[in-house]
Length: 250
Image (cartoon, rainbow, N blue to C red; front, top):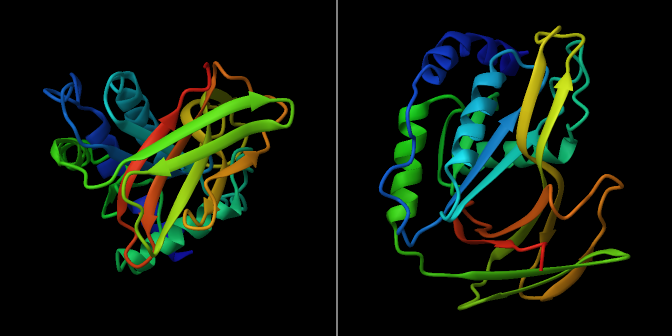
């Protein structure tokens, strides 16, 4: 209940943040850094659509940039009148882990985390874009190379790092780029919601124990409308130190 009340109190602030227009990312085409932007959202949350729209704006401006966008649909809103078909308990657990890393008293939606080290209300346009600019302007100390080949069993995925570090995990996210849903109940009843960068499968790997694996794909998977994003995250504080994307159209 505490989480839901907190989300409701964010509504006015969320709407104000979403009203800004114009390009969000400027002077970043030649940036050497990367930004992993993780949105925790839900179709059952009335404060979330503006954050989903912000992610869509970032997705439109991401071409040529090392900007990796991920939308996790959490499941703790599913008991408020509407079951989000994209929700998974795994995503709620990931958000709870961030609450520990970032020393938060509770989880809430919409929330955005940038490179695992800073978090914001999901529609806080100014602070989110500032954090993304900082991340893109940084010089990464690590690099992740990710490859994926489509075969009858799914995706054959392999990876390598320039200088592998201990006490890290590799996260692989299978992402559906776009979808729309008609919400028939709950706080967003009667609305048609558009989603981007929907995480459909999340896999955690110990990069020190393997360098390849087979990833099963859903029945609605296709190479044109999906992508595979990977990133290396430190276990002790959640900071993301490398990220990459596999070209599924090779």
